[in-house]
Length: 113
Image (cartoon, rainbow, N blue to C red; front, top):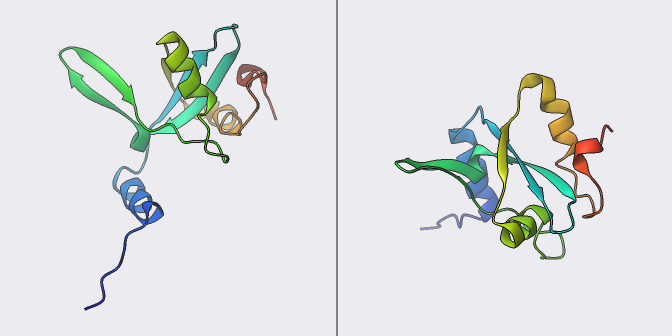
């Protein structure tokens, strides 16, 4: 009997189909020199683990193409702080721009195109 071996991509596609439509968490962080960062996370990567005490968790920020940590996780590890912002329809285009892999010096808050 041949069995399909599930790849991480296969599993991701299944998860995405289960939680669709997905709310987006727009995670803002600041690094140790004061540079702001914005990064969108789908519901697959953030959740509310409980209500007593109340908490929000961000899971598995993806790695960069070279296997390094992305700015969001670096900033959270350095400061222990992040803010989850909800994306409204009016902010969707701006949120999409912030999904681009910019260098740390780029301030996603100021990107328009």
